[in-house]
Image 1 (cartoon, rainbow, N blue to C red):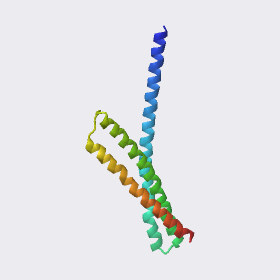
Image 2: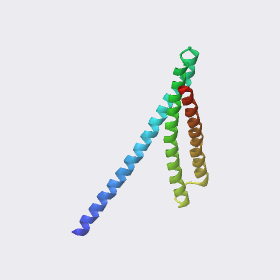
Image 3: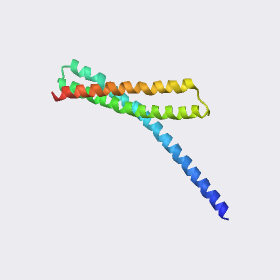
Image 4: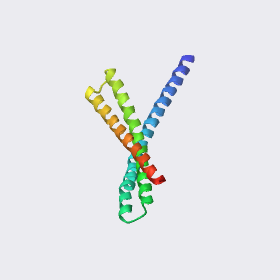
Length: 136
C-alpha cells in the first residue's frame, strides 16, 4: 500500500511542477507581449516630444516627454535583455548537451542578446543627459 501511495504522491508532485513551469512560461510570454506595447508608448513620447517643441510649447515639456519616453525604452530594454539572455542560455545548454539546436542558432541568439546592451547603454546616457537638462 505504501508503494502505491508514494507513486501517486510523486505523480501529483510531478504534475504540480509541470503546471508551475507552464504558468511561469506563460507569465514570461505575457510580460514580453506587454513590454512590446509599452515600448510603443515610449515611441509616441519620444517622437511626440519633437512635436511639442515645434508647437512652441515650453522646452520643459519637451524634455520631460523625451525623458519619460527614454525611461520606458530603458525598462523594456531590460525586460528584453533578461528574456534574450534566458533563451540564449537554454538554447546553449540544449546545444551543448546535443539535445537539438545548432551553433548558428546559439550565435544568433548571442547577437540578439547583445543588441539590447547597446540600447541599455544609449538609453542610460540619454536619461542622464536629459535629466541634467531638466534640472538646469
